[in-house]
Length: 232
Image 1 (cartoon, rainbow, N blue to C red):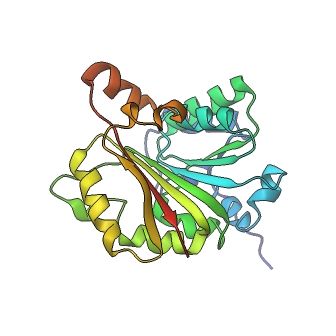
Image 2 (image 1 turned 180 degrees about the horizontal axis):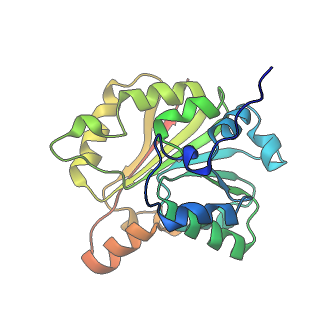
Image 3 (image 1 turned 90 degrees about the horizontal axis):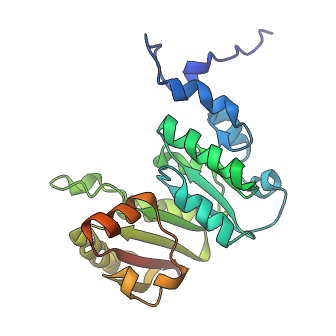
């Protein structure tokens, strides 16, 4: 029986080799306790993420974690939660892991994985909630947005009843379109929404993303916010 071939490092990220690679790609190896990029390893933890974190605390997923400010802030604010943050950009992953290590966090993990692959590594009813902060509004190509019916089909499989999807956006029309979308989504209901998060009662508990900080300080833009609960 032939042995399974060990992947070249670049094969974790690309289908074909490149002449030049992002220097931060190689540096992901510096933080094995905070960054996971091997799909086979991720998939092997399906249904067993609490074993990975060595506790029975609720698990939350963040799609598009940027440079990790939100993930780190949430882990500090809620030490009895486990936070799995998904991001594709190498430098952002490296920065997130570096900051997490500096803070000594043990309840966060950063995955380099596409959001549509969640069901490959998360089991039925395994997560308590999901965060989607400032996704691309896809103006003119709204069919490409992440918050659409297929997302809720995914949440049907991986999120517990009573769990929540938390959504923040600076794009006013995306906010309004999401409110309209939920009227036609079974098993989910909007339990809170506001077109100005930072002037609402939720502001005191809000954890800023780096993008959110920029919009508040530089552009003085209102931030829209929705909480959507899985009811059955």
